[in-house]
Amino acid sequence: MSAVVEYSSSNVMSNNIPEYAQDGNLSTCFLSEGKGPWWMADFGRDITMKRISIKGLAHYGQYNVLANPKNGNWSLCKRIDICPSMLPDVKHMELNFACKRKRISRYLTIIGKFKQVPGSLSLCEVTVYS
Image (cartoon, rainbow, N blue to C red):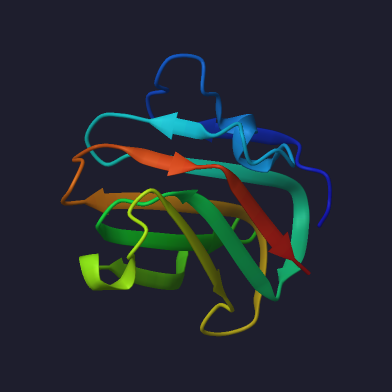
């Protein structure tokens, strides 16, 4: 994965900043609150996204992972629905997936739509393999 130039997000809970989602430390997590919580990484240039791994605190609902090349349009990389039967350990989750199609993108965004904890997005480590 290339070095990230900039992070942004919706409202941050406490001091759990967006950078924590890619700091290599599972004990620090980005946490967002509010309606439609989201997190975004700007890689500074287009990269090929072959596989993505998301580790975080589990919340039932939907994760929408979007990619956007420089000066391009947002496209859905993966939509993941999480239901109670998928997460026997309600505290933690790990999602590993490839995008529907090969993605060359500068930006990666994760948007949460949750039922269990409305408006809460927790990302402890997001890894992009290129």
